[in-house]
Image (cartoon, rainbow, N blue to C red; front, top):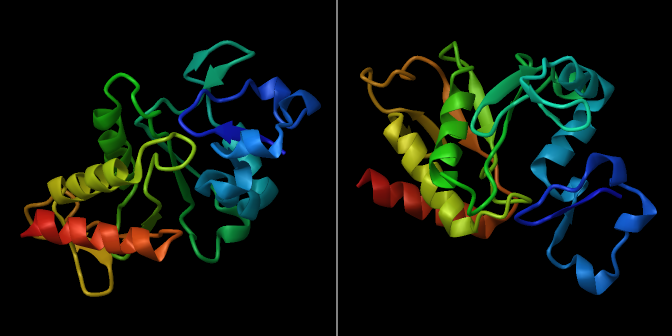
Length: 201
């Protein structure tokens, strides 16, 4: 299986899944398999259509061996494949920075903003994990803090169903839909709720 060290670096693609990347159990404690990351799960569930859609995105920099299609802090939209019944308008892919990288806090906030730019209708709903808190190695408290400040800055406010909705017509996203955080642990949800209530008070 492909694995990703928490906090980087990303393994060289030509070695992913090969025997030389197999780790002893004790050495894997700080590593994540692709199915333990939101990106890996979504790509697997979306199937071949998502894989093909990602492959068709244009390269923006790099070489044939290592290239970039979506720079850190930016976002791209692809078809949803097998997830189209839940996400008919597609999947938004955004790249969070590695923890401790240059301007990582700014780039993490920018990743949220870039994803929201694909909202174009009041009925749109964006489901988002806590960006950067998986293989990118951003500590949970920092990921929650930046997520909270990002949505607050953009004019979103939590409602009773734990969705984030535009706070007022002054927000540039006021008529552009709803953000819904999707978390893997209940304890993470409680931490996020507390942070949202604190910043909104």
